[in-house]
Image (cartoon, rainbow, N blue to C red; front, side, top):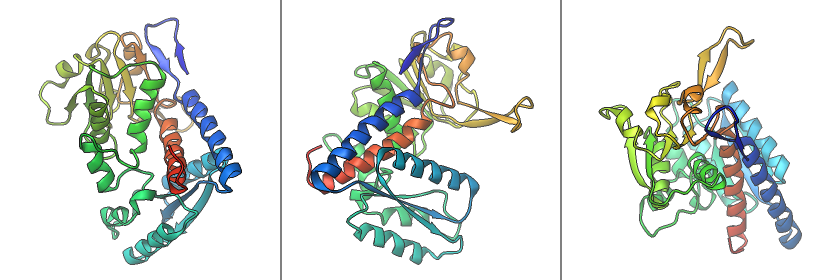
Length: 302
């Protein structure tokens, strides 16, 4: 879980360990569903083309499904498939009662309109949480989306399971992407934080970030946030995954976050590492969304 590091102030949040706990909880619920109703959750992942990074992500999701007992439906399509054919495949999966979640691995080839394809996924199977109706409900007070986007949901789960309270806190989100920055800001707002979004046109971002009790770094800029940008004791969730040159590694590079980890660990109260922080939580939340979709589908109370 959250492991204190003796030579520094920050408590390092172990995303791998927290994700493993969630996997175990999901596995237990999947077993109960199977025993009680004779059904198991099903997740369909559509991959178009043969991009190596996409293949890696898809294989990781399939492996995770296998670990918790979720049925994985793998749909591999050629790079030159037409947009209409791809949408037809999405409609097939929408109609399949044994599929409770549909994920289209991005990016798609340039001749396909991603927005159009994603909007064709049945909202009750939108386990990525990106359907406009799900995002719209997330943005409205008193409304609850059927699914939350996986990475933002994982960020809040890390805070919650590490004992970091959000209510009444000053939260700063660095980055405003549709995938992380915007939805995580909305989630923090729903959790009663006072939220500021820092982006590429923000004046004097350092002074704004220094005021934050909670920082969610999702700008995609390697080690952008320095130790002296962080309020002592702040909780820092680093979503960034950036490759930087490292001749000492066999690969020639290493992964770093948007936060300068070595500087931040001397100042922050809580801090996620990269890798091993937010990454494992994204997959865990995808599995949780699929489980929730299955429970909703069979009329079970969540």
